[in-house]
Image (cartoon, rainbow, N blue to C red):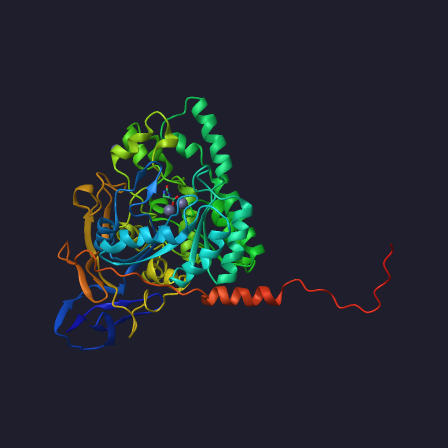
Length: 483
Ligand code: URP
Ligand code: ZN
Ligand code: ZN
Ligand code: ZN
C-alpha cells in the first residue's frame, strides 16, 4: 500500500520546490514529479513540510499537588490536530525515586499516544544511584537530562548537584537541559509579596522578574562550560536570558535557547486582567513578559541565536488553577499550546515576515531533530525519512476556541486569536492522522523514538575540551624545594 502526496510545494529547513512525495511502510520512498500511489492526498496550494516536533511537554505530570489534565491520549491528539507529529515529554522522578522506576511510569502512560514520542529524564535529586542510573537511561535511548533551578523544596537542584550531573552528562555524551530561574530568590520574593498582601495571580509575575531568569541562565551556561558539556535552555522568555545565550554562542559555547509560542505571542498584561480565572489560567514559569522581551525572542529566532519553538504544554483546568485562590504560589504552573503552536507561529511569524517558511520548519522541527540526534529520521522530507509530514494550507483560517480543541481543559490561552495557516493533513509514519478536521488515528499508534547519546555536537565539544584541557607544563631545571 503506497500513499502519494500530490501537487504540493515541499518546504524544508533549506529548500522550497514543487514535487510529489511517495510513502510506503511509514517512510518516504520517492520524491519527484508525477508520482503515483494507491492512495492520493491532494496538496494543491499547500506546503508539504516535516511534521512539527515539540521538544517540551508535560502530559499527565504530577505537579503542585495534582496532575496536568492532558495525558498522552488527549495531548497527542492535540499535537496532530495542530501539525505536530512528535512530542518529547519529561520523565520526572520524585525526589528519592530511581530514574528507571520513573521511566517505567512514563512507559505506561505513553502507551496511549497517537503520535511518536520520546522522553527527557529529569534529575530532581542526586546521589550514587542517580549517577549510575543515568548510564542505563542513555542506553534506553534517552540522551537528554533536565535540571530545575526553580521550584525550591520540590524539583530544584543546587549548583553542586548541577555540576555533578553536567559532568556525568559529559561522560555519557548526553545533553543537559535547564529550567533557568533562581529558585532561592523566587521563594524570597514570593514570601514578601504574600506578606504584603499580593496574593493574586499577578503576584506570580512579580515574583519571577527577568533578572531571576537571566542570572540562572548565565549560571547554568558557565557551569556547563566548566563541566565540558553543551546546554539546552528551555522556555527562554526574556532578553536577559537570551543575552546570556547569545553571548555564550558568540564565545564558542554550545548553547541552545527555546522560546515558547506563549511567550512569543502573549504578554504580561494577561496577569493584570480583572478576572481572577483569566489571569490564573495563564500562570506559568517563567511568566509572560512585555513587548521588548517578545521582540528579543523573535529576533533570536530569525538570527539563529534562539533555536527551537516549543509549548511546555502543561495544561490545568480552571478548577485546578483555583487551588491557588488566596495564594498565587499554589496555582499549578503551566499552560497549553500543543494544538496552537504551528498555526500561531505561522500567523505571527511567517504571516508578518518575521520568519521565512524555511525558518519556520527549522525552528519547529529540523533544529530540534538535529539537537536530539534523530535527524533525518525525523525533521526531514528526504527519501528514507519517517513520513511524519504536514500538508499545510497557508490560506486556511480559524478563530481559536476551547470549544473546538482536542485538549481536555475548559479554556484556551489563545482564545479568540484568528490564525491563518492550518494543517490540511497530518501524517504520522505515513498514516493519515488528521484530515477533514478530525483525528483519524487510534490511540496507541505512537511509538517511542530512541535517541542515541554521542550526538555530533557532544562529540565535537568533548574533542575541543580534551584538546584545551589543563596540562602540566614540561620544564627543565625545576628548582629545589624551598623548604
Ligand atoms: O509553568 C510551567 N512551565 N510548568 C511546567 C513545568 C515547567 O517548569 O516546565
Ligand atoms: Zn520549566
Ligand atoms: Zn478572560
Ligand atoms: Zn516544562
